[in-house]
Image (cartoon, rainbow, N blue to C red; front, side):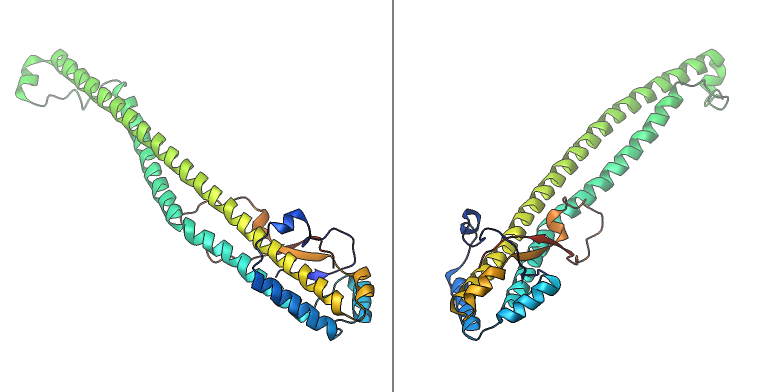
Amino acid sequence: MIAGLIRRDTGASAAGSDAGAQIPYPAEERKADVRHGRLDGRRRIPSYTQVSDRIAADGWFTTAYSEELQEVGTTRVHHERHAYQRQVEPKRQRVAGLRKRLTAAVADIERTEEALRLTATELTADEMVPCNPQETQRGIDFIRSRRRSMRGRQARQARERIEALTGEADDLRRQIAETCEEMEQDFERAKVRGRLQAAQVELRVATYWRALTQTHPEGRQLTVVLPLVRLALPAWLDEPAPEPTDEAPDDATDDHDPSAGPAEG
């Protein structure tokens, strides 16, 4: 869960920074955050004593509306991950199909290389057995010449097939690499969108707390201990793109690691 909690610390305002100004913040959401902040402030939610005691105990404090914003952010970040998975599923299936074809092509190359190797070995006794009356009549030298000529044709055919299969395998590897690169780029874009959703939550929580301190009877005291908005981001936002698998991925459960992002009240 994204934890838009408050602890005592110093830092610039995420809401007022240049970076924060670039975060999409619909007017209706801003108005709602300000309205809830002012309302909680007039109701003295939370009191200065509550915040001070909690921060002294474990460094954290939150309110019902802050929790609500956290849940919204969690859901939106989670949706970005699932949107990415839906987007790349056709590409994952394509990579799986290409890999199967590549495996078959490589196995075929190995079989053909073995057949080519055998064309350079000594003729076997079975091969020297006459196959027709003409070979019986013309003798062992004639048979040996015919078998070596046949071996030569087999060798040429094997080399031609190996060349064709090698070209096919190289093309399959190229397609796999290109598709995997596209998927990596898709994942990076999903991470950007996910971080943007998390940053918007941080901005909304900061706006809420700012409005709260403006109407709270103890607002000035609260600004001393408030706030640093700390968001625990899902682990996938810091991970490399997942390796494409042959099986469709299960729905991922987002794990969250704590990271600090400043927002001044």
